Length: 330
DNA sequence: TAAACGTGGGG
DNA sequence: TCCCCAAGTTT
Image (spheres, rainbow, N blue to C red):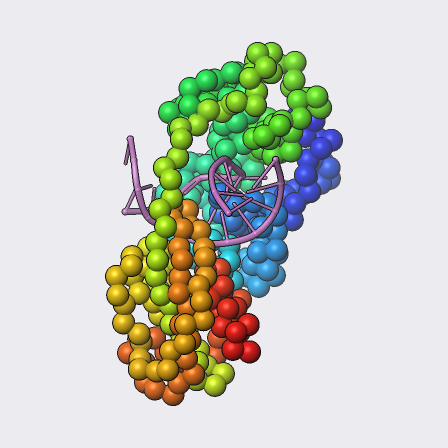
């Protein structure tokens, strides 16, 4: 805690130790929004998104009243789009409740809030001594106590260790302290043990195995899939469709495509399709090589609709295809 | 329990 | 170029 009081990272959604001393309290809406954005996502990537969301929807009630398409478009590029769909569901539930539940248990019942986020919001925004376990905490616990069991099997053991360290006083700051430590000193590769405030307590360090922990099971290799997208333009309008609410890029705008499984797909209309080449993209569990076909046409499409398109509202894969067409056809 | 689910930066 | 991995949740 002493280290955190002097070294806490400054972030737009955080009330730092000095600010808290001056009486400022974290806004549960800010804490929740940032925590959802930070799920499997770097602080650097989240910053700008957080600022835009707060500027556009200053209170959870504003977000609850937003149009689905507006929220999905604002989330575009951040990834894991189920988070944005659940974000809206959650905001609307919270607005209906008249505010955020103030307990971990109450938060856990909301869409998109799992064990980590429930503990984070409960401890940071409401001072509940709930134990926060994210990737940082897992790594710090594994090293501090030299846990050699590989993840994910070690998760319960690491959680129990983190619970033992969770204080009744300032539990939210303690959680953020461990996460900051993990993010800046106890890093996955080449940890900076020389400047670590708990170096003398670290069992992995004592054994010289800190860089090997936490151990992890080997991951399956990613297969490569192939597919096609059709980018049809009618003057300033582009042919797009909203993807199904479930599955990959669910709820996001996209260009019509095939199944991305190598099977022969059908173009959305007859047109003078030109093959502009390919776009490569890697998702969580597969590589994708997408052939990009483009045409200028006034024909009536069998799928989607011609609309004015803001390229910033596209998920990154679709944005790559769009950029290829703009570069080539320009 | 395991698989699905994005993206960008760093080594 | 390729793999790791980042404040995980849902099904």
